[in-house]
Structures are given as C-alpha cells and as structure tokens.
Image (cartoon, rainbow, N blue to C red):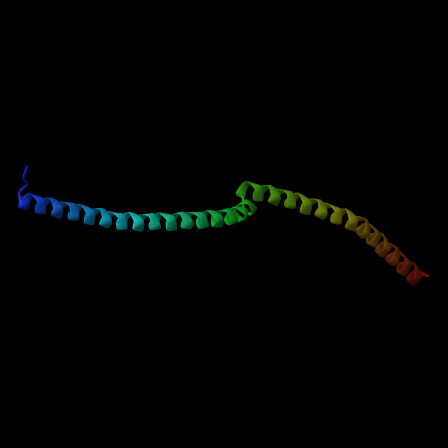
Length: 111
C-alpha cells in the first residue's frame, strides 16, 4: 500500500490548518470567556447598586408618603385645635378685662 506523496502533503497541510483553526477558536473562546466574566462582575456591581437604591425607593414610596402626609396633616390639625382652645379662654378673659376697665374708667369719670 503506497500513498502518493501529494496526498500525504495535502493531509499534513489539512492537519496543520485544522490545528491552526483550533488554536484560533481557542483564542476567541478565551476572549469570550473573559468578556462573560467581566459582564458577570458588572451585573453583580449593578445588583449591589440597585439594592442600595432600593432603600431610597422605599423611603420615597408614594403610597407610604401619602400615609405619612395624611398623618402629619392630622397632627397639625389637632395642634391647631388645641391652640384655638387655649386662646379662646384668654380672648374671653381679655374681653372681660376690657369691659371692667371701661366700666371703672366710666365710674371714675362720673364720680
């Protein structure tokens, strides 16, 4: 069984080409693996950043903010009513003091 030298050379060239292609694809796969690893790190960093922002979103949660605003309004209304109740007796007392003062001045002038 004799092989033609041209077939042997062509086979060797094909094997070298196949080996070169395998080496070239290994380089691409290595580069792609590196890109995937970098993306994994980027995604992990973004996830951490989003978790940090989640607390900010919880603080500015719209429905909760409305509840806090309603509670604050109720508190202010109660404080206003308490202040009005506190000032009304003083107003009545001042009115009586003025009436007494006017009466005393009138009595003094008539006497």
